[in-house]
Amino acid sequence: MADEGGAGAGAQGASTGGDAGHHDTGLTPQFLNNASRKSTLTKSAFDVNSRSFVGTDTPVTATGRESIELMDYFVGPRDLEKHSKLPYFLRMHGSVLPRMILPLTMIGGWSTLITCLHMYITPRMSIGVSTLLLTVLGFVVGLALSFRSSTAYERYSDGRKAWSTVSVQCRNLARMIWVSTSEREGEDGKNDLLAKVTAMNLILAFAVSLKHKLRFEPFAHYPDIASLVGHLDTYAKAAHKEEHLVTPKKTIWKRIGEYLGLTMASSNPRKELKRADKPLGNLPLEVLTYLNAYIEEVVNNGTLKSPVVAGQMYTALGVLTDAQAANERVLATPLPIGYNILISQIVLLYVYLLPFQLVQQLQWITIPGTVAAAYIIIGLAAIGNELENPFGNDVNDLPLDQFCTELGKEIDVLMSVKAPRFGDFVRGPAGEDNQILWPLSNSGYGEWSKRSEGDIRAALRAKVVVGARASQEAETLEKTSSRTVSIDRGQVLNSRGAGSRGANAA
Image (cartoon, rainbow, N blue to C red; front, side, top):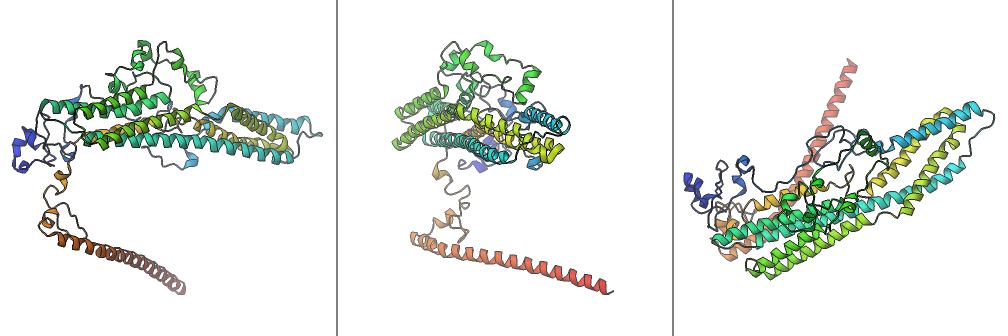
C-alpha cells in the first residue's frame, strides 16, 4: 500500500507524507498534514516513540492488574492472561473456600459437641439416629443442589452469550465505519477522519458504559470511560458530583467480612442509584443515539455511499440494543427468592443433622467426616450463589474489564492504518508476493496477469487435482512417519531385551 517510488525516496520519505507507507521498520513516521489519498501508514512502520504523545487527550484503554496482591487474592474477576502451573485442587485464586470458612467452623464445632455428648455424657443412651434418614435427605439435597447449580451456570452462560453478541456487533460496526466511510479531500477530509475516530471511540464507549451499568455504576467519571464520553451531553455526566470522586474507605473488619462472604458486611450494590438526586439516564443507549447521529451524518454528506452498508450499520445498532437488553435480563431476573431460601434451609438442615447419623458408627471420625461432607455440599451451594450474577467483581465472574480492554486494542489496531482498498494490495508490494495459484504455481499476480484467461482457468482446474494429490501425499507421509516411529521403538525394546538377556547369561 505504499506510494509508487517510495523505495527510492530515501531520506525524502522522512519529510514528506507521500512515503509514510514505506515498509521500512527503521523509519519513524512523521504525522504531518498531507492531502494525498494514496499515502498510508502501514503496520510495519510502527517504530514510534510513544513518549511524544504523552499529555494528549487521546483516551487510553486501561490495562489489567500487573500482579495479585494478598488483599486482592480473592477479588476478581480473574485475569485470563495469567497462568498458574498448580493443579486445580491446589489453587486458591478462584476458590470459594473463604466463603466457607465460617460455616465450616460452626459445623465443626457442632459436630464436636454432638460427638462429645455421645461419647461422654450419654454413653448408655445413644443420640444417634438411623442412616435411613441420611439416604432420604441426601436424595433431596442432591436434587436441590443440582437445580441450583444448573440454573446458576445457565445464567452465567447466558451472560457470556449476550456479551459475545456485544463484542461481535462492535467489531462489525467498527469495521464498516472505518472501511466503508470515505474521506473527502482537503480540510474536509481531516474533519472526516476525526469524525470517524470519534465514532470508533463511541463504539468502545458503548461496551464500557454497558459494563458499568451492569455493575450498578451509573456515572461517567470512571477512568476508563471519562475521556470517551466526556464531550457528550448525557444524564450521567449531568448527575455527577465531586463527592463521587471520593472512594469510601473500608474498615479492616468490613473487608474481612466481605472475604468471608458475610451478608451483613456486603454493601447494597444499588446504593449509588438510590443516592442520586438527578436522573441518571441510560448511558449505553445515549451512546448508541450519538452513533446513530454519526451514521445519519455520513449518509447525508455523501461519505457513506452504499445504502446497503448503511442499512447494516443501523441493523448493528439494533442488535446492540437487543444485546444490552439480554444482559440486563440476566442481571434483573435471578433465581426467585423462595427457591434460594428453601435450598439454603435444606442444605443447612442436612449438614446439621449429619453428626446424629454418623456418630454411632464413626464415633470420633464423625467430626472430620461431617466437615468433609459439609465442604462438598456447602461448596456447591456457594459456587451457585457466586455464579448467579456473572457481571460482578467476584473471581469467577465474567472478566468484563478484560473484554473491554481487548475490544479497545482491536479498534486501535483497526485505526492504526488507513482503510485498505482492494486494488492497493491485490498485486502485493513487489507484484510477485500474491501467489494466487499456490501450490500449483509459485508465480505471483504479475506473472499470471500476462497470461490468457484460458490459461488461468485451466490452471484453476489443475489446482483441484494437485490439491487432492497433495492431501493424499500428506496422509501417506504421516502414516509412514508413524510406522517408522513404531518400528524404531520396537527395535529399541528388542535391543534392550537382548542386552539384558546377555547380561544375565554372563
